[in-house]
Image (tube, rainbow, N blue to C red):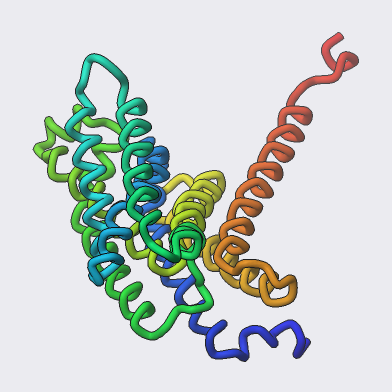
Length: 285
């Protein structure tokens, strides 16, 4: 038994665990809205569209999180500006901005002597390198995201399921849309600084998607998403310790595996339920 808890007796693993749990809470609050609003592709594009801001902030000696957030906001602004274009769909504009921003970021980073190291750190991060400042950043972001989510809960709900009704109720979908975009931007920027963009996106989507298979009411979905994200954090850190794998990527992979496990179990249960309700040939004759 002592060997099973051995990883969590080490200080940097404990900090990684606490950081992962805080990140799971933030992602649970935002991920549900991202999936329900069909903003998953935007989240993926935004996670990579932060690279130009990170690269420029790094070269200028600025704050990487601020650079990432500004770059993500610029991309979100571009998507909103092109969303009503009659010449092409919203996904096309997201894809074009995604490739454009990522290309600019790679060009900027390529001027750095540590190009490969910088890009690897941007993509995968190092959750085991979380320090106290990172924990305070996550805690502060969590409080801010929770506050905005509580204030805009009704507008978010109406905007997600019936935008026309949101207008008739005077809930002003414009500010709600902006608030949701800012929430996604802050979440991705803060998560990037802790675990890198790819694991951050995995933690944003996989636990919430799995939770939506288990519950219907939004508070229950968010709570389940937090539980799944926290479970993925603990399990991923444990596997990483004994298998020698990248901690952030392992946590994200576990979250995705949990999603497919829940999906498989649900389909199996539904299949058995359908079989039980289907009358046999003898019973229909």
